Image 1 (spheres, rainbow, N blue to C red):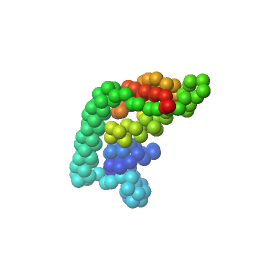
Image 2: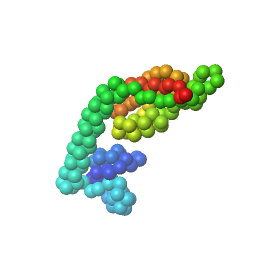
Image 3: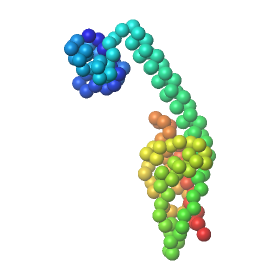
Image 4: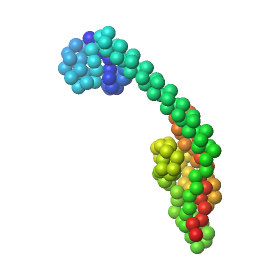
Length: 149
C-alpha cells in the first residue's frame, strides 16, 4: 500500500514522502496513529497545498528577517548597570534581557538561543552581538552599557 507520511517515521521515511509499506503495517500502525494517510488523489492535493503554504510562510519569514536585519543593524540598545568599587561592571547583561528589551521596546521577537556568538556583555561600553534571524541572515546589534549612578 502506498502512504504519505505525515511525520518522520524511523525506518520508513521523512515527513511528506510517499512510501510503499505492507498493508497490515499501514492499516494497523501508521494510519490509526495518524503517522500517515493512504495515498489518494485527495491526499496528494492536500499535500501539495500544504507544501505551497509552507513555501509562502518561509518566504514571508525570510522577508521579515531581512527587514529586521536592516533595522537592527542601525540600532543601539542602551542598558545601565551598577559599577563595582574598582570601576568594572557588576554582573552581566544576558541575551534574555536583550531579547526582552527588543520585544518590549521595538516589538521584535527574537529567541535568546539565536545569538550566534555567546559573548557576555560584562563591561561598560559598546559590544557587538550577532543574531541569526533566519537561515543565513545574521544581523549585528550594538549593545551599549553605561554606568548607573
